[in-house]
Length: 134
Image (cartoon, rainbow, N blue to C red):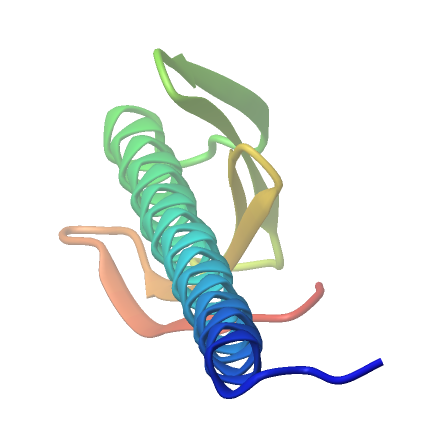
């Protein structure tokens, strides 16, 4: 069987078109995957920022509880539209208090540990740290 020159050129053109199309499809799929991955990263960062804000809100609420009642010790929580937080105030004797706050937003969790070394006449926060665990 003899293939003429026009059929060979048509075959080469067809194969070239298929190869270029496959490469184009691969590039498009890669760009879509990168976009999805970037979107997930941004969402995770946003949830982390929200969780941090919620835990800070609970610390502020705990400090308010101490301001209203200098012998306050206990646990409470707050709920928000996008998450929640809880806090525990531990009386460590004298004017020393330990505040442990946990904020959550989606799958993100933020923990803040605050040490108070004076509650009267003014509250003095000696340290405020993000921690992995209490």
